[in-house]
Structure formats: structure tokens, C-alpha cells
Image 1 (cartoon, rainbow, N blue to C red):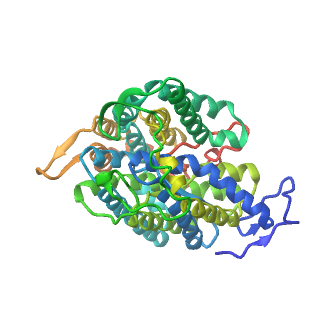
Image 2 (cartoon, one colour; image 1 turned 120 degrees about the horizontal axis):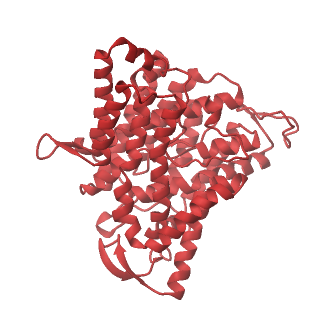
Image 3 (tube, rainbow, N blue to C red; image 1 turned 180 degrees about the vertical axis):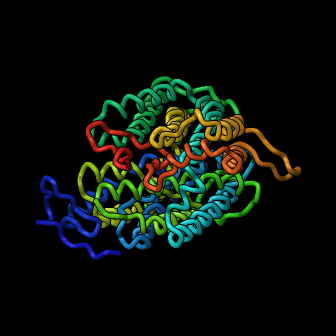
Length: 483
């Protein structure tokens, strides 16, 4: 990792100046910036583990370790925070629907992380152009879209029925907050809406009393309070996340186990992670003015190995975060020292079981309001990839494979091979898009292939992640900086 030198007087960033990755402000300001990065990534990093049925305290803890690991692998040249990835949410929802355990979930994630790491190593030696040949924008956009829209039934059947009115209120607050709030508050709209929904649920428990609705803890309609702090009082202030005991409803540290059927369901998320990391490297390169393309392979390999490390102990998959690009764009501080401090702060937070218990007690209705927006945004980021790359859907080579793959995935269609193995939903749709696209390209007439050649550009923009990065009108748009 780079040894950071002091920028200017260590206190101020003058107009027109930026703090480079190998520079830093004084340690007080650097620690403060690290805390700002933690708050920026916080909402999505612990919301997604809850949605995936994993431990949010462990996710925060491992995100800190993984961020520091990432900085070491990229030699301190790419400022980035590695938070929980949304790319695998769809596949994990399918695993849960089939009765898969948390160990099988993390086993599938671990294999996907290893695949991403190997792809990163290959790209490091072969060059980044290979990515765009195998996964042109029309394919990448389709995969990101089908991952998001395949999740619609999860909202409709799991979260929304738990408390529809709280869900509706939180949804409206999140949408309005992401538009109306300015600066840093706008970038943490997810976190603020979650806090609002949590408080609203608690107030309703005190004033209205119990609610009769679907209870995800028991899997049936019961009369219960919205906020259940039963495990908060018994949790310690300091200590490791708990060991998993799924028989008693406790998910924590555990060893992964492996199922080929479930691994196939999760693997398409690797494509989204490639897009996320490539977009992040390009965005940082534009903002810092440094050519970081030679580091793309390292970034992918580092994220892949970080996901392996996190899932090996029962944690969540990781990815680079666009929320933190927004912080850098606002402050003009690209110092990797701030990210190292953010990693250390996250590790400290991760050593509080009571903090983790409070997060885990987030009411289902609150998650319903948040996920209805987040899942939709994941899907629409696929359309964003198409728009930014000028994908022409008047060309049958583009529209036909994508049309088939989207319907197969969104409709959760299955292709059964044996009684114990089937391709379905996201996995089936992704394979259909990739295989059919390249098959059609091989037999397509020249004018169709020529149209595609204009769209597959090594410098083409990609989204920074498949989660929810709020675009701010008063700050540089990190995605626009990819152009």
C-alpha cells in the first residue's frame, strides 16, 4: 500500500485541488472522513444481509476487513469501500425458496467469489478488453435487469404482507428523501428511511398495539408487535457475532457447505460484480485523472477474494460502493487513508453484538418499503447500461436473446434435468442470454454484427453497483463521469 504524504497544510483542500489516493489530510480529518464513508455505505451494507437471511453484524465486521484487504491488493491506488453486494440477492432468494440453509447460501457465494477472483487474475494478464467481448453491454444490461426484476415476488410475498402501511410509508419517504435531500443526507437516504420506519413501527406499537399479519419468524399470520427487541437485551455490548444456531433462529458465524444446484443459482451475480468493479475503476480514474485500467484485474481479483474471505466465516458478498464515490466527489478527497480508517471503524462496530441485534430486529414492513425501491433500481440499472452504450433494440441480434432471457428469469421458469437438479429463474435466464447472444452473433449477417461492433467499446461506461446509489443534482454524477 502507498505511504501517504500530507496534502498541503493537512487541513484544507484549495479550490481546484484534489487529495490524491497516495495523499492524506491530518489524521483527525482523515478519521472523520473515514467515519463519513462508513455512514455512507451503512444502510445498504446491513440491509442486504438482513434480506439475504445473514448476520448484519458479521457483514459490517467483514466489510471492514475486506476493505483493508482490497486496498492492500490494489497497492493503495484505488480508493474504495467494500460493502455488501446486492448482486446475489436474487439467487439467494431462490435458494431460500427451495429450503436452502445459510451454510448453503454462503457456500454458493464463496464459489462465486472464487470465480470472480480467477476472472480478475485472467484479466490482469489478458487485458480488460476480453471482458467487453464476452459480456457486451446488451448482455450485461440484461443480466443486471433480470436479477432485479426477478426479486419482485420476494417483496410481494415476504416483506410487504408483514405491514403494508408501514411499507408504503417508508417507500414514499425513501423516494421523496432521495430527491429532496441535498448533499450528504441525500446519499444516505436509504439509512434515513430505515431509521424513520424503525421509529414509526415503535411508535405504532406503543399507540396502536399489536398487528395481525404475516410473521416471517414463524411463517404464518399471527398477532405480534412490529418491533421485537427480545434478543437485544440479552446481547453483549462487545464481542464477536454469535455462532449460527438455525434450529433456534440464530444466524451468525458458520462454515459454508456446497450444493451444485444452489451454486448455479448464484453464479450469474458474478457478471454484475464485473460490471460494478469495472465501473468503479473507470469512475475513480476519471475523477483522479490517473489511468487505472491496468489495475482492473487486481480490483476484480481483490473483490473476489474478499467475497471468499467473508463467506468463509458466514458473511455476505462484497462489492465496491458508488455511495462512497459520491463522498469523494463532494469532498475532493480520494485518499485511501480515509478508506483504511473507514475499515477500522467498521471493524470496531462489528464487535458489538448488541448493535447487531438492533439491526436484526428491523421490522419486516420497513424492509418491504425499502426493498420495493431497491429491487426496482437494480433492474433499471440494466436499462441504464443499455442507454449509456446506445444499444439498438431495432437489431434482432440484441432484442431476441434478451427478450427470451428476461421472461425466463422474471417468470422464474425452470428447466428440469433430474429430480435434484434444475436451472431456473436468474440462472436459466442468464445462461439463455449469453449462449443465445453469442450463437446468434456467430450466424448473424454482417450488417447486424457491424451494428454491435459500434457498441462494444473498451471505454464504455458501466454501472458502479447493482444496489442503490442516489444521484445528486448538486454533486458530480459518478456514473456520468464514466463517459
